Image 1: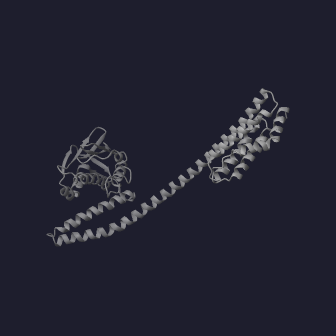
Image 2: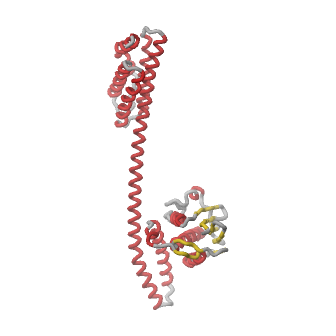
Length: 370
């Protein structure tokens, strides 16, 4: 050991009590999880490590500081304390150590090397403590997020299974009721309210089909078929006719091209019914001339179906996330209808978009021409 290094170590040992007193008098005990005595004890441990570090060559000092800093960081994290307080107190210790260097009889060049080593120790201690503390904190947050995500997915999966089960339980008696309604119609053709009951059952069955599509089970049970989109539009309008009549909506069709699709007919029927039904719902509050335009255009590479209504503009904050689940502007809406529509259109290789202005709102379905 060089005479200068030995002199510095002996100097700090001789002045240990004085330096520690000056340091501990300034220590911040603001953290409720550590008492003043514990903070002083931590300061004493760091000072002991500081003196031991002076024995080491520069190459060995870095891993030595890192090991101790990691230990302190772990202790601070387990105590759920603020790392900022530790950094503040550590720098108080640096200042106190540097303040006492005037008592050394070393030359300026030697003194500068001593100051550099002191700064190296405290800088490295601060860096390793804070970085390791932050890393461990990030890991805890990440694990918590993964835990939450995992349980959220499990709950959604369970909810999907429960929904599918309940929906099937509801559909079975509805099928029986509908069958008996048809028998009553055959025996009593003049009972008009049977048509109303039948229509309401169809509407209920439509809502049940939406939940089945959401549970993803209906797609597994059916195969793709070829069907005419124009005929499907006509069927959807016939299904919605009572509601169209009630709101007094004018339907304007411009079906330029016949378009055969290969896909799941009932699912795509749900898309058309849902979008048109939503449009009728919006127009039910319009005082005069409620209208819906249904246009189709066949181009070289794509087929475009546009359903437009002259109802109120969709607010921007909703428009940007309109196809996400549980997003709705309706007071009693579920926010699942357009989400399901988007899922079905994408499953058919298409794209569903929405454009809304003060004059009109359009839902555009773009499908591959093939």
